[in-house]
Length: 152
Length: 205
View (cartoon, rainbow over the protein chains, first blue to last red):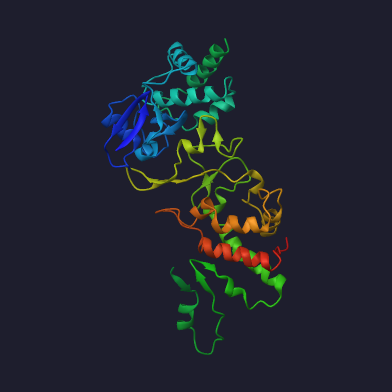
């Protein structure tokens, strides 16, 4: 049995300890906002927050999160997350949308550490989040817009 | 541990009138300290011991995380890390994309096919002043002995690091599909100790 906090609520799952967290989120806990993209930590679609830091859930054994706090796209909140989601809506960032929950998680994590990121900061933070629709220009603009909004 | 007599096959095949070559006993491609006992000059022996340590130091399993720039390498061909990542202020990646965004406390097999993502706690780059890629044995030797470029270690601490550090040790236990560093960490530690005890001499540039 593995127990952890998911989006502020305590959950327990009875699965083999090597089961990827992504499988647990989607199949056991019905949190399907987090997507499967590649399964090998190359695309970023499965990004969640583990104890406040980005984590690829497809390569995370569920045993690793026992006793930890996991936040998914369904539960992320706070000023940075709200600014990111508003900027995403404002620019219609998503196209097909598959990668976007991962993009939002990484963008939020970046702004939590660097409130006013440069293009280079954005490139470094977002390099592991691939978008097959190539919405990268809008993603970068939206992160800048979110930073401006946070700055007031 | 499997021992390999490098010259065994050669000896079997060699015509009897050839002079017998010197036996070189290795463990997974790394000579053990006793192989250097025949070198009488202490400084020469020290240099030879360091040259053997270089077989480990120069292996991609070790070099990949000792870049001289800001990009880790991967694989035996030492290609740039994929996805693209940067060193960051603490040798631990960029805000939003730290090493532990993907790397965990131990290797984790992919659920969708062959392979695994490497892991260890900690998992991070060697500091840039400890970069080795592209440097000569002489340069690396001087660097290893310089506390300003070895993490403030004296020679005892350097031996301890080579002989027992867990992340260094991962190089010999990299998991299925990855070639381990030559020898074992134990032998690497013994070579380091013997190199230090013989004066930690460096090869000439």
